[in-house]
Image 1 (cartoon, chains in turn yellow, orange):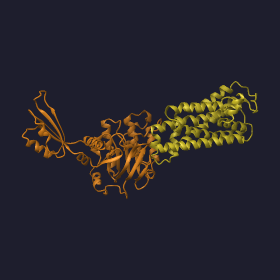
Image 2 (cartoon, helix red, strand yellow):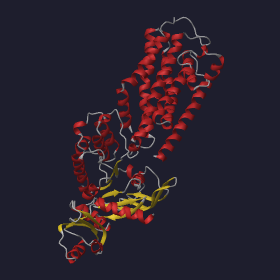
Image 3 (spheres, chains in turn red, purple):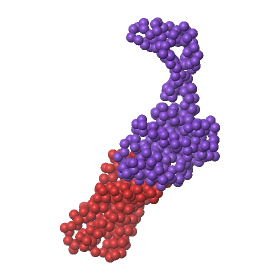
Length: 246
Length: 327
């Protein structure tokens, strides 16, 4: 299985478009949003400055892009092309394909997190304790697994022309409503009430709690855990269904 | 392939890789999709060292049969054993290499990378460079998989199927998309595989391939086995050889139709004039007796030709006869 992980990874790292959108683009977006903001004003209810706040949002956004965008479309395509069938004629265990996809996405999502941190620290003077940088990286990286599972589920759910629009709607919907692009405290109240329950909101909130030197809220962790079980369970169920259909 | 031919007659010979059991054993296997019975009570056995062609019109159940054999689909009833175990176990043990018609390739990687992956996934792998060379794709090893022609992609699939020392090689329509010379080169490679004592099972639309390469031909129709034997036996089963000759002047068609051992006869005008010669085409189950009787009519047949049916005609004859029986 290591051979497949290596090859998946080599392929991902060779895909410039994918690397741009998952590794460079979040940092660019960070600079666009936080570039003009001064480093004094605090965002309501968080005590964090806009750059500090947006750094976590964009790191989360980058990780989300890396794990969600690549896999869903590729899995759908490779199911259709028959590559998944061909792999079933090898010794690779059934779940090996999905694991290799997830592992390679996880490797790409790490730089997309770190690059945002480096840009934020260098350009916008975001300063945190060493343990906070480490905890942030770990939390955002681990949390991206939730969306990796979602990507796999979409890949097995949708096919053909449908997979891209479904991925896009899910991706933009989760990013925007979850408050990755702008603090959800700027939303009207009714929208805030919805946003609070989204996995992306919990995802960014987990990082922001770390920035505030707090332990992530149990509620956010629970929401993420529940979504992980839902997505991973859904992916496993769809995978099994697809395998029986061959 | 004298060794392989002998294997048809005698299931075990010393030239063949020794295997305790049949390579493949289908026992009363059925598989339906909704109301359609794709495979209907199929029983068959493949023996070590055989090169077997699986023939059948579209929808005969060839692909489903191969999918069942490879464990990609599961039978509704009956049992499928490969090397005495389940298909999946046989694959995990490295006994089976397969090339699917519907087998896609991972794109955006090079041919070489893909073949190295296949070698890494095989329990008894060959060196990737050897696999590339044998499949005739060493010179395109650096090319991206999504930039290949249809024939090249088929060769890559073949390389994936032969990445290791498998005992059974399954090929579904392997030469689709190849031109004539590529096809010949492909079968030359395949023969080497068979000569090393491997069992080869292939499905094809090109009947001349089955005729030239297979020691044994299985004819599948509506999910059932219609015929099982050597190409010569299948041709004999279809009844017949072709006899054709020209006759000059007026022809007594009634007398011709009364010839012995006829399965079909067609009399057509051989010249422009109405009272000119006729060309007679006959299919006969005993061509010698039929020709003898033609001379008995007191006519002088010219341009006499007696030929065996091609496998293609035999195949058409067998399947049409079956269609007629069923309707």
